[in-house]
Length: 213
Image: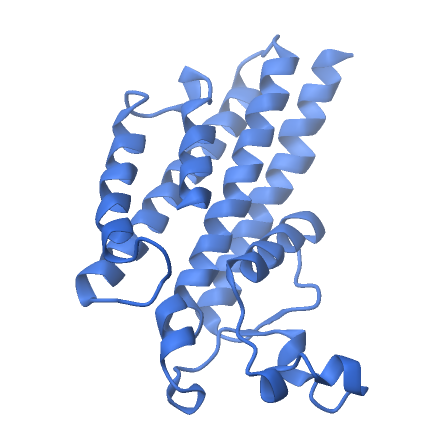
């Protein structure tokens, strides 16, 4: 919920020329999708229905689509129109980049091994195939103090923080780091995220800095 609200706030702060709808339409729709999810799981993710699963994925998809569209408009304006307000451009680029990190972290969290409810409520042997291989998944034969925290020994499962970390590293290194993508869908998603982050870093921020100078 907190991650979603931060993404909504970042969208609300974007310049008007990066919005393809009235400012409060998409955030209002995102909050409308969020309400039943919070009602179903007000404190911890322990219950899931088919409808809630669809709502969760729809919410993440809507945030991702709106942010990628904003990135496209930002790049288009930089290429085709002379932009004079460099400081505003830097802030907008940072907002798009941060939203990109949040939304892809949420997407990985929602998809991996059937989602957050399945990862904590379903026995490990019954979980769907993993989309990621975390370092904890292969540390059971390491030194004792490391092996004690592995998936095999401690029944460790990734949390939202782990997926946000994957998202941050993918947006800064433009490639996987210590967590490897396994499934085709996650490889495609990480590719899209890397390209979006690369565009933001190399084109948007570089152009903004040149304007400031």
